[in-house]
Amino acid sequence: MSSLQVVQNVPASQVETWSWYAVHTRSRHEKRVAAELEQKGIATFLPLITETRKWSDRRVKVDVPLFSCYMFVNIPMTPEPRVSVLRTSGVLAFVGGNHLGCPVPAHQIEQIQTLLERKIPFAAHPYLEVGQRVRIRGGALDGLEGVLSRFGGSNRLVISVQTIQRSLSVTVEGYDVEPLERTKHII
Image (cartoon, rainbow, N blue to C red; front, side, top):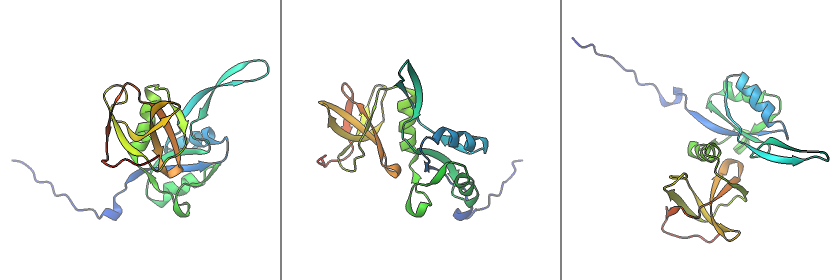
């Protein structure tokens, strides 16, 4: 005979929902903060890029934060992990209203991870709120969404993290780009 399992309804307020949050850090403390949070068992995302720095006698490749003074943590909306993050040396505050933090949509984090994992060339781009939203179809960037922009004579896709008001742009020459909106905004 089969057994019947009873599932209790749990109030929505008791369900832990995990979200990404942007954390503002002291200048040049991003790596240290990420390491300390990882030791505490808190999932972090610190996007790094490699830059060549020139000293008087040599050139050195250095991994630097993509967004200076910012990193991301994936935590539930409960007080304990939030306090643990805030008590970490080098953390200034969560980014958002009243320093409580606003969740960063997971797809924005995933898009940045996609660019970094696939080693697609990109450039930092000024944050934009207006412009036509588009999606790339096909190729290595299939499914990425952002704002279509024209910069330096080439079409670029701008991917934004609204919470920290930072953006990245990648050239979309040779990719199929489809509009997500019918109306076109002026950039």
